[in-house]
Image 1 (spheres, helix red, strand yellow):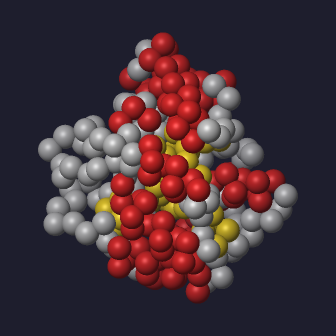
Image 2 (cartoon, helix red, strand yellow):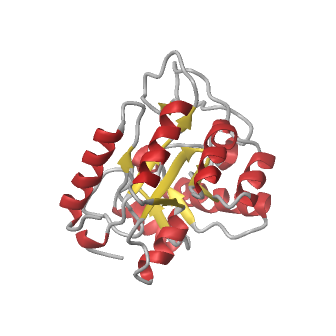
Length: 238
């Protein structure tokens, strides 16, 4: 998948939970999230994992699909997001930090602590039809890593998750969305089928998929505007 016209529509979430403070704007309240999934369904759109979306794209069957992704692997993905997704018949991809399973978001200093899914949680959501993919071992910016560190973050994270789930891990998401030519080439060489970035860049393509941020302020009008903006940017609308 190359070229601007080939970029699928993928929403980027992190946490679905109640909150008092959210300085990094990574949390969507359960009520808002349920409303957003209702909006997709009313529009005739179906939320799917990135793996499912790319398979459908390849066969020309993705016309009403929207990729749903959840970075970091927070425990509330299992407790809050998955029940809503299943109620709508949706799937999603969760990108887990393989070296911190059952821990917390230690990379977000001076921010509210959020618990990460355990190995058992990952097995449970995978069993419910969700895709589990890699978000590195330690959630470090890969652009600042040495070549050896980069290789370890890519290969060890996949090995850990494959051991936990006893299934192949094919997707990756760049921590912080940081990805240059070296990182994209390394992910491709490591054997990942695809990788998610955040913003569009000169590297946009199957191993640097641009995504659209979804936040707690996104009601129907904002969701519609974001969907339209994606269509205008990438040359299609649905």
